[in-house]
Amino acid sequence: MDRRKLQSAMLVLTLLGALLMLPPLVLVFNQPLRHWGLPQTVLYLFALWLVLIAGTALLNRFLPPEPAGSDSEAD
Image (cartoon, rainbow, N blue to C red; front, side, top):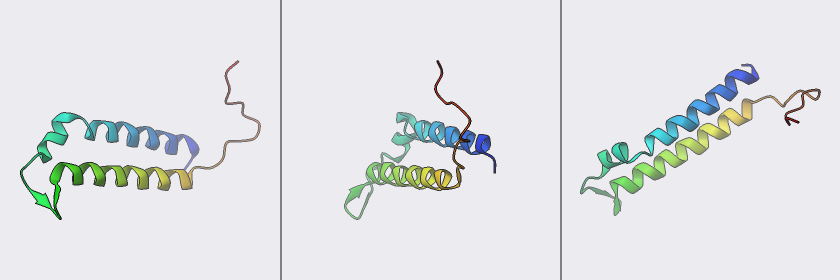
């Protein structure tokens, strides 16, 4: 995959993670259920956090380095 596609995938992952942490979706998991003594909401947020970290690490691993000639700073 080229660099632009991976950068776009990182943006989509960030936006999807932000959307999944919005209160209307988090409140879906706000049930009086407990798993291993933890509320379901806490497990949802922790699992989402782990998935976002793993997705970022995976995308970052395949991201090629920036070309040496490109200047990323805008003057």
